Structures are given as structure tokens and as C-alpha cells.
Amino acid sequence: MYTLLSGLYKYMFQRDEYCVLILGLDNAGKTTFLEQTKTRFNKNYKGMSLSKITTTVGLNIGTIDVGKTRLMFWDLGGQEELQSLWDKYYAESHGVIYVIDSTDEERLSESKRAFEKMITSEALEGVPILVLANKQDVETCLSIPDIKTAFSDCINKIGKRDCLTQACSALTGKGVNEGIEWMVKCVVRNIHRPPRKKDIT
Ligand code: G3D
Image 1 (cartoon, rainbow, N blue to C red):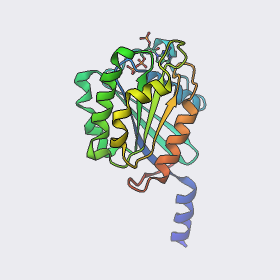
Image 2: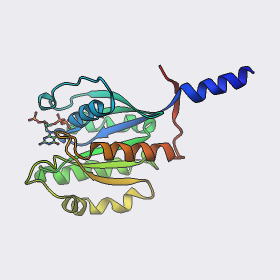
Image 3: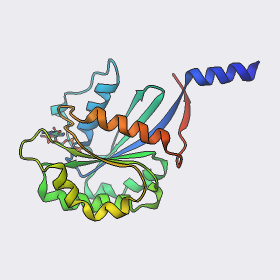
């Protein structure tokens, strides 16, 4: 009887938790994306004004619940000296959101190098990657085909893992829900990294 009841309790009150890294160069829009995501997915969340966000130095964290799935985000600083810390988080992560500033053509090759280094890390094998072409609200921004062409060298290195390039504006929220819903689907079905179990609090 105890086993039956505890099984029922777990079924009803347990969430699967997944850790998702938010990576990309400084100024790409990682923190704005995280705030926009928390505002959209957490009822009653009163975030800071998106236009007042300044670049990530160190780490921002955030959690959202989508049904019985909990995503815990780690938004890591993107400055060159902070990129060397990214790999300390890889082994714990179930998914990666890589943010690109579509208005910054000058730093696109720098962003590609950081992306390439990240995807070739063994610790991230099989981990789904959502590439956000951010700042698409800016009229003069690079298009998705432009960005895919610039990142074309990386295709072979992505391998068999799930990968999606999503047009997005972290500022207006366009493309944010689509990206998050895709990530939830991928982490839930990924057999390589089992979720952490957590009782709903
Ligand atoms: P980071 O965390 O990757 O370093 P931030 O980047 O989220 O701090 O954003 C850096 C700057 O880009 C901020 O502007 C922010 O408002 C802007 N930004 C982020 N996302 C978007 C977007 O989708 N569209 C536009 N137009 N701007 C965006 P400031 O002026 O504060 O530097």
C-alpha cells in the first residue's frame, strides 16, 4: 500500500528538472532573453524592464515550469575571459541555447569560433542546441540564411544531436515561445541525459 501511495504521490507531485545553458558573446542578448522567458512562462513574475538590462558579468540564473517539466537556466558571461568557464558547466547541462547578435556582422566570425569550440566539447555530446538569431526586430539585421552561411563550417560538427536555428527578438518576445517549446521537447526525449527528479514545491 505504501509503495502504491508513494508511487501515486511521485506521479502527481514530481517534476523532471533539466539544466539549460544560455551561451553566446557578450551583448548578444542572453540576459534579455532569460528575462523575457521568465516573464512569459512564470505567472506573476515581475521582471526588470528589458531595456534596462546590462551585459552579463558572471552568472544569471532562472527557472521556468512548462507542464511537468522544469527548466533551470544558467546564463553565463560571454566576454572572452569568461568563455573559458563555460566548459565547467557542460557535464551538468541537458541543453544549450546559443544566442547570436544578428545586428553585429563584425563579431559574427568571433561568435562562430566560440560556437565551434563549444560544440566540439565531448562533454556536450548528444545535447540539443537551440541557436537563436537574436535582434531580428532590427530592420538591418542579418537574415537566418546569412547566419547559416556564416556558420556552415560547423554543420558536420553538430553531428546527430538536435539543433534548430530560430529567428528571435528577446526584446519583443518574437520566437521565444517557439524556441523554449522546442527545447522542452528535445530535453524530454533525449535518452543520453536523464532528468533530475524533484518534488514540486
Ligand atoms: P548579454 O546578456 O548577452 O550580454 P544583454 O546581452 O541581454 O545585456 O543585451 C545587450 C544589449 O542588446 C542591450 O542593449 C539589450 O537591450 C539589447 N538587446 C537584447 N536583445 C535584443 C533584441 O532582441 N533586439 C534589440 N533591438 N536589442 C536587444 P543596451 O543598449 O542596454 O546595451
